[in-house]
Image (tube, rainbow, N blue to C red):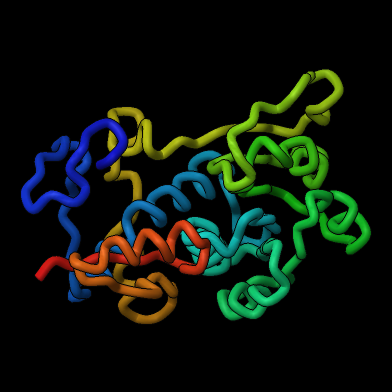
Length: 240
């Protein structure tokens, strides 16, 4: 919605059948709506691209975004250790409450922080994107994995990227663009355990409820909050 077809704010819409799935949950609509996009994307990146295993350490770069928080939630629940990043020290407590082992303040040079802290990072879930790609690749151990899923740092291409010099030997780099493939034949929604995720949201194991819910007539204010970066989580809008 809002990507390949319009209608995000319409009362009645049509969607591809492959993007519709039944779920069994007692959550209300506002709570239900806060989960699928971020958790399906986070699950696909962590377990589809990165193949994250219990006991491994994953660095979630851009962790205070709604997708970043979902990744921290799922990785901790999976038994992984999580290093989470934020540019704002005031947001560290939020990430610690989600279960992050340690919070790093992202100054664009995390590789030095990770090395200096004695952390062996197995995987990087990178939401900052091109502006820090070289640095993210330098944070993982030999034969580690990096998955880029977002562009919080902007869409400017990586200037003069050269795999020979910029991609450490043995390190795997991948990309997951949920908006383009999720629900398609190669990445079906059936692969994502949404019922299990909703059950953990209901029980409080996963902190996925919306941080703020707006009435439809407050949609302009919702956009103001989102564009100001003040949400710190998923927001939902209800009609009626």
